[in-house]
Amino acid sequence: EVQLLESGGGLVQPGGSLRLSCAASGFTFSDYAMSWVRQAPDKGLEWVSTISGSEGNTNYADSVKGRFTISRDNSKNTMYLQMNSLRAEDTAVYYCVKDLIAYFEYWGQGTLVSVSP
Amino acid sequence: SYVLTQPPSVSVAPGKTARITCGGNNIGSKSVHWYQQRPGQAPVLVMSHDSARPSGIPGRFSGSNSGNAATLTISMVEAADEADYYCQVWDRGDHLRVFGPGTKVTVL
Image 1: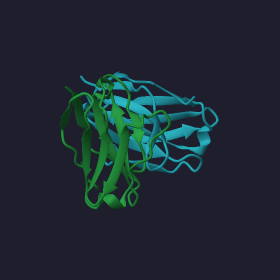
Image 2 (image 1 turned 135 degrees about the vertical axis):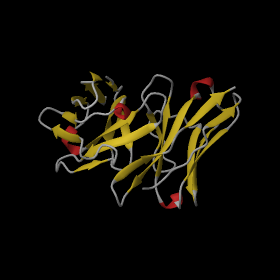
Image 3 (image 1 turned 135 degrees about the horizontal axis):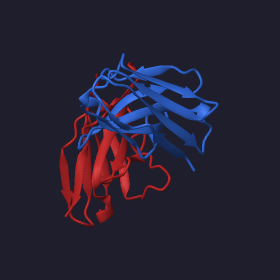
């Protein structure tokens, strides 16, 4: 059974930093791309970033490019999202997702990031 | 970047058919994927590659894609189908994943 468990969310001031983690199990982690998708309160889904399985190639949405960094440690079956220079508009539930390149196969339950003074 | 459109809401009586559209320029040339998000829950994939149902998704769910619109059809709608539905495509050129704005399905 695929399990994706996010952690690291919380309250942070504007301009601050936060690091999210996603622990994966139930599949061969290094074989698959992984992504972060976020959802602001009462808003729709927004793709944030993707990292490929073994090569570590990355892609970012324009809204986070230059501020967020996605990474992974295949030895630990874990993906990360380093978020710097956080803004109020980054407030959202962040979902860890198993990415089949064209689409998102499995989703975690999400971790809430709140950016507020 | 590629833009998807969806109606904000669709209302349907139990036992009837709900059709949710997803519009985009020549979307028929892309693969469209659909997600269901019930209140307070994480999204779940309900349709991939236009019309492929993942394991565990009822046969009441079907999909199509042609021209400038893709459609997710839910037959014999049940109360449990009340949720937000999002379409999504992969912008191959820019390696971007794009979501539609979502459609709230209300079961009357």
